[in-house]
Amino acid sequence: MDQIEFADGFDRPDTLAFGLGAGQLAVVMVGALAAYSLVRSPLPPAVADPVAVAIAAAAAGLGWLRVAGRPALDWAVFAGLFWMRPRRGTIRWELATAAPSDGSSDGGDDDRSQLVELFGKRATPPAPPSNPPPGDRRKSDPGPAPASQSPAGPSFTPILRPPTRADGARRVTFFSLRGGTGRSTLATGLTCLIASSRTDEQPAPRVALVDLDLRSPSVAIRLGAPERTLLDYALAPPEDRSVIDFMITHASGARVLLGPQSTVNPEWPVTPALLREVLRELDMEGFDLVVLDVCPELNPLTTTAICACDDVFIVVVPTAGGVHDAYRSTEALRRLGLRHQLRYIVNRSRPGTDLSEPMADLDGQLIGDIPDDDAVVTAENAHRLVGLDETGPAAIALRRLARRVGSELRSSWPA
Image 1: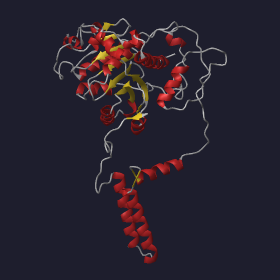
Image 2: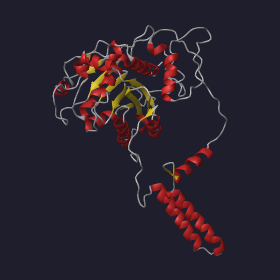
Image 3: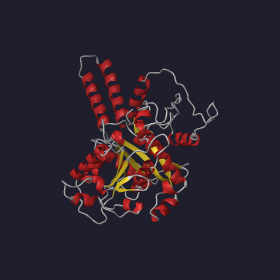
Image 4: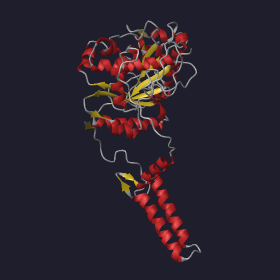
């Protein structure tokens, strides 16, 4: 299995002095002061000197010694945390791939086994099935799933974070500091797939897509819908405009506020204040999910949009440059205080791609893996969406992701 390589030392921590980071330098200084204090203490030299030398040597080793590319201080901290962790025994649970005991099948075994293999997560013990009677979505749904169990199935870690606001739409975005990663393709496809996910038991969530990429808006091209845009809304008289009047309705049922079709001033009239007004109106309109398509740079408008989101999906292209960008994007968003909102989705992956090392280094959760598929380009050229109209590997992966997100959305509806 191929691994993605990137420059050695790319993620190396900053140093303060003598080639040491803050923690290492503090240990060396404390050790030196402790050794000096012992030497100057009233203890006999035969006792104080050997102890002082041992303390100074241990501190120097923790500071400068590196094992497997990491400082010895890091390994000492890891060892301490390991030995301090309580041990209550372990139980090994395996994902059951056989059919249920009653002979029925939900048709999801292949999806579950593939996703568990992708995410590298140990399956959790299955919970008893719950079959609420059909009816109104806000009355028949069992309510939020427990933290240990995703609404998409007991074997998954939830994609969406628990709601942080009492009411209003869930807001998500796809982001990357690198252009051409497929952010707009994923945002448009996910929006329309979730909007078309109506079943006999429950209606589809109400989903809106807002194109905020002022530099290179492409949602209108993908949908083949050159209608009124976000710029028209911004220029309309504030006392008369309503955002719903400037949105188009896609065949899937999604409502879309298109981006400007021509070059506009990045500072006016589409401003952060206008965006907050749009989001407030969408909340009042009763949407369940709002997807924001942003540009690959952290300008004031994009920063406002990302900070307003409940979940930010960083798009990773499985190349050396794509992994490099994932680190850069993660660092930039963490500086905005968005550490807990971040998830990762691999786009245009190929067989044998292994991103386990970067994901472990970033402490990131993969929510999906979209294969490289020529059908995506073919569908875009025909103003179609690959997830709705195609049956290739990318379409299947997109529909699987949309099913999980839609299921978690429904689980958050009030009973």
